[in-house]
Length: 225
Image (cartoon, rainbow, N blue to C red; front, side):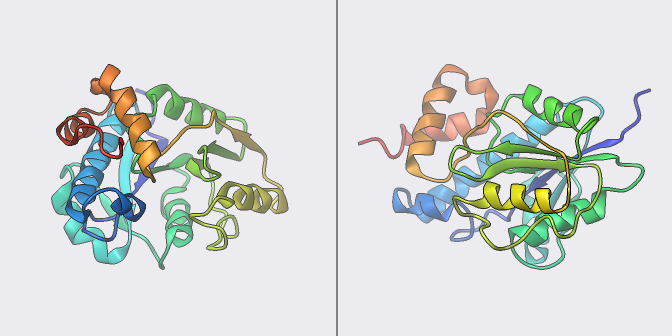
């Protein structure tokens, strides 16, 4: 039997109005954005569950644990992060999960269920030879980061959630002397143009993210003028 030494941790929030995908509220009502996020999250969990020999967990802010546990499959453990903000959450992922029995850990965002499973498999493979693997987004951030150890100074609140998040991460990695490999760029869902791109993609391949595809079909391509 293949040992379970690979862990995929989904970075999530409780689907509450006003706390998720807030930039989409410029084009959609709060409740609609919240429902969309719930679909994205559950489709992301389903994507993770297609991987072989991978443990799956969710990391979230402490106050979100109870609400999040009602929104996702009961079989996925939910762990509260230490501290506040995305940087603290990412640091918590590797501090909590990067143990000798879990030699490869990837933190993955909760709004990319359309990412090919092969990209996640490739990320784990990279960790065979590199200290750090990063999946860049097209807006200057990243959709995943993986390592086989905890590096407390790798993540910083400076630049998190902005167009220079990837640049900041790579700078910290260089300062720590880590070897890094980048995956192919991908897009996540932050603004209306991202949602249009996802809608076009899922019209052709709804099985990639069926809950999200169904939501998009009911909203008939929100953001289209």
